[in-house]
Image (cartoon, rainbow, N blue to C red; front, top):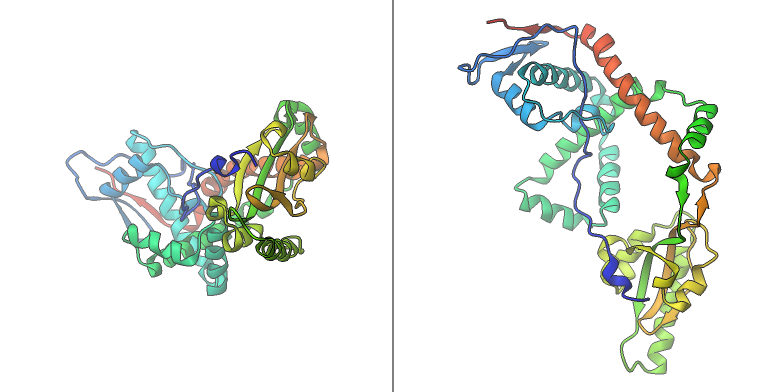
Length: 336
């Protein structure tokens, strides 16, 4: 494959979703803390104090990722002290509310979340722990943060997302109104691979053994629910193994002729037969095969549904905080 290993896209460890909250609590009458109040208490939620330093930090950082449980809702940093204080109160409300869902999250769920996190970022548990040490974070502290994240996700899913219904006709209207989002101008392949490399000057016996190994790995790869990324990490001899075999996007002309012949008629998710090139034996996964023209609705329906769900969830999230959540907690602001 022509310089296929050099096209790997770098990925980084993500220890929490990039999300936050976007809520102006109109029901709360707040005022900014005076400039000289370096760390005075300016508000409280259910008796839990919010200090002027909390507000300053909130304004500089925008909203917290854990606050909305990975909903994809975020507020940008703000220099407006009113906005920062309102967001600080909203975040504290969410943190208080999320505690009610602690009993619904068990250790097995945290383990699964961390495992999925490792799979998505193509790292082992040892690599995760090493990165945490580099960040001066203990694994127990990391698990505690993940637990809060999952509790918040559970809360948002139950209180917001599960109450949203996306009608089929809305999906069809969006598809018809946004054809550019689903149109491909040129044929493209998004690929991942497992490479069983063959050393220069390999003997016929070595070739047979390596071919046999490739066949065995291929059998594992085509099994139902097989995790291709994990197999790449375990078996591939290509540098892309640390990225789950991800290679990137290619035009047909970028590909080795033997590889192209093996995948040219493949659909999304299909895995090629074992392909021999001068580099060795390739097992290629076609993650996406984009053909010129408008994609069929059935191929993008779930993508549209998720976008509409996210858009509506943002509005529903704000409404839930402003109309429901604030009424369930005691919020006090301190006037100058």
